[in-house]
Image 1 (cartoon, rainbow, N blue to C red):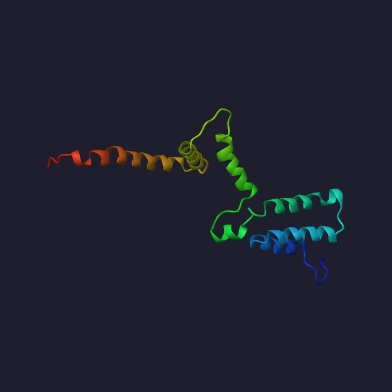
Image 2: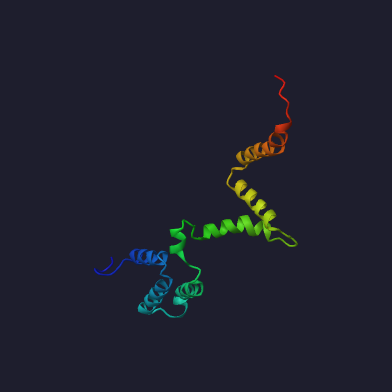
Length: 147
């Protein structure tokens, strides 16, 4: 049981998560450092906290969670990073591969559509667009009505 006046571990994490998501990277790093000091952690006991503090300090200018949330952008997690690795690195980062921007983008879009299970619907739409572009639009003015 948590003593009166002291935050529960879950409450402490929730409060500092809100600070971090609000753009308070330095405040969050300082709070982690202070908590480790107050708990008297040393050496191996502090390793995880030290890694987190060092990460926050090194990446502070890039950790703009407040801006990302304000603009509706995703905030990276292990799940997102794993998806990026699956979609991008595993396909584009192969020995001897040379990619231009348009080719890489086309391959990544197809991999995303396939990974989401939407390939059949996409392919039907793609064939319809190809027909319109290559036939209907091109030969529209050359048709002679017979009726």
